[in-house]
Length: 106
Image 1 (tube, rainbow, N blue to C red):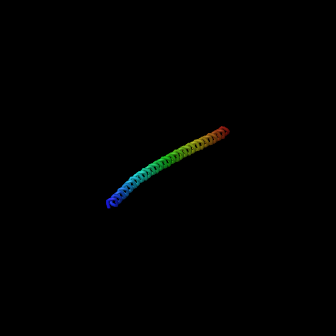
Image 2: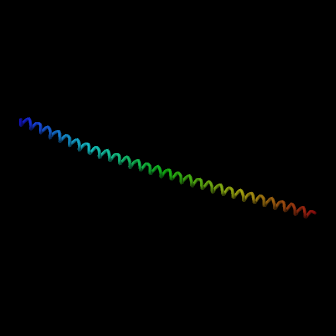
Image 3: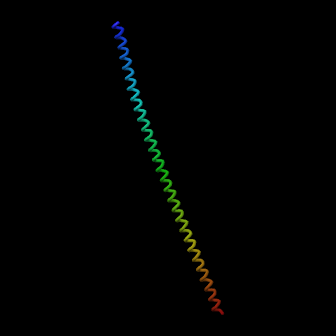
């Protein structure tokens, strides 16, 4: 009876050791999985930050190009206006010379 009882107790202790060992393994696995999830989240956040920075950079670039284009168009408009005024001035001067010549001939 004592041997039978001792064997049962040894089996219980062995089962308890296996259970505790499995609990430790499970705890380590849970910690590893949690660390992996945290690492993945950090990576995701970093990728999101990079994506936003790239989008902001592209937006600033597009705004700079638009401003350059606007300035170019304004410069072209002013130059065209200047050339138009100069042509009008030349035409007026030419008309004035013709008028004076006509007056001189009279």
